[in-house]
Image (cartoon, rainbow, N blue to C red; front, side, top):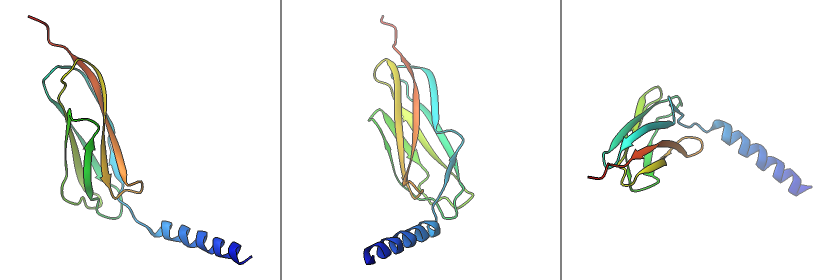
Length: 128
């Protein structure tokens, strides 16, 4: 019986703490960008913009691309509630064909991360 009461107390306490926690909330226009058809070896960039709809400043601690062919850049300063930030993804295609890459933002949102996607098709240069 004591164990059951302890477990109930622990669950109620954990739920109360979770409700009190405040997180940043990144609201993006879109979390996916389709470059369409692009030329091989010619870098393309898309800037994802977002608004922090949370009650605390949003702090981006890292942005990681899923491959070395994608270079990220991002807002380095905390984004205040209601403020706007960005994450840029520059893709430089070395080989022809369809691509689908992710960019993962590590931040103080409830899940701890936000994932963005870029995609398109790389057209090979004609042989001379």
